[in-house]
Length: 334
Ligand code: FPP
Ligand code: MG
Image: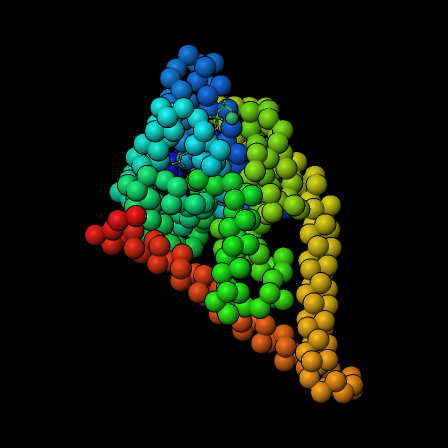
């Protein structure tokens, strides 16, 4: 099955979608697609068939999301913890991914038509080399598309991602690109694999498990989290509508929490900048400044910090781009 499943909604589904769309809609939805193996057991089919049907369900869900005006979807396709499963299962999942990413490349026209940009988030160096190359080709081929975004978390856990972001900031400091005082919540967010996406508005986990299993821990602190008992391969349009309705019922509280957090972050940054200016002044001639000079020094410091941070983020982007381009070159060795 292809990544984007063609087809329209039924009349009843369209009607429901239009009613839902009269309310606030999530722009970005994340899924923990759980329950593939239980589904396989329930249907007395091979475990691998459960995962294959899980992929098919992803393609169907993407279509529903597009029909509902949800233009960004992030899915947990393979956790770093999943490497601990049996060799047979891990190999099966790697083969499935390789087949689907190869297919994605052959469907480039369709993805271009829908403007789908595919990003793969995680430590891809943990994957087999052939799969790394296939993923890199798919990411590079769709990176200019900008109508909708599918983020596939593969060889991913949130703690690993956060630790990696901290390492990147340490690297930036060692290289003299940023100062340790430039480290902030906002900068850490920009060093995560998810830096190109807004935080998810809604996170859905299927199969009745009620935990986050190390998925998007940083990004979902102000998201609506919905746990549903349905097994992923049995997910329906109606399950998705129910989750969106939950989001709508909690919308005001979510928005309020987000605004409060954004205000607090801005105040934190301002205070940090003020403290740095004060320290610089004490280390300088030590003369007291009048209010106007203090304001000018603060503005000057803020713009220098922003310049440093932008240079560091460009260097980081360059590092990531070179990894993908190296893998796409005809003589690539991972
Ligand atoms: C969780 O169910 C599912 C997974 C670990 C794999 C999810 C992968 C897919 C749906 C295919 C995606 C592939 C691509 C290329 C995007 P489980 O195995 O934990 O099942 P259980 O909870 O019933 O044991
Ligand atoms: Mg599971």
